Image (cartoon, rainbow, N blue to C red; front, side, top):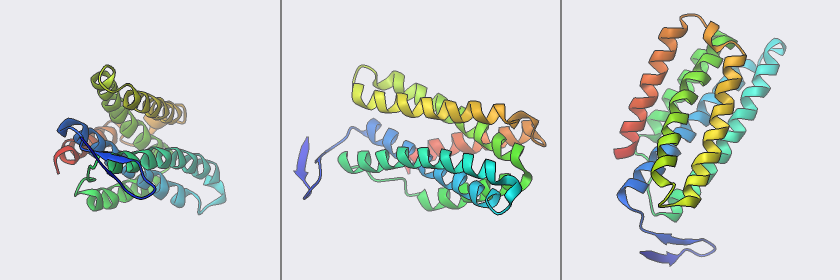
Length: 187
C-alpha cells in the first residue's frame, strides 16, 4: 500500500511486519556501531601515539554512518519506527566503545571483531531471506555485509585475538549483540 508523499520525499509504503523488524534492528545496529567507533576514536585521538588507530576507527565510523543514513531513509520510506530502545543502545554502545578503548588497541579490535562477526551473520540471514522477494534491499544488505566483513578482518589483522581476556570479552560482546538484535526487532 502506497501512502501520500511527503513534500520533497519518496512515497511512503506500509511495510510487512517482518520487513519492519529487519529495518528496525539494522538501524539500531548501525546506530550502535557509529556510537562504538565514535567513542573509541575519541579516546585514541587524545594521544599522538594512538592517532593511527583513531583515524582507522573514525574511517570505520564514517562507513557505519553511511549505513545508518541508508536505514534512516528506509525507515521513513517504509513507515517504520526505530526501536524504542535507541537511547539505551546509545549509552551501552558508547560505554562499550570507551571501555574497550581504555583497555587498549587490541581490546578495541576485539570489540570490532566480536560485533562484526555477529552482524555479518545477521546480514547473511537477511540476504538469504530477501534475495527473491526484494532484490534491491538484498543488494543493500550485501554491500553492508561486505563492509562489516572488512572491518572484522581488519580487527583480526591488528591483533583482536591477542586482547586481554579475549575469549571472555568476545563472548560477552557477542551475547550483548544477539540480545540487542532480538529486543530491537520487537521493541
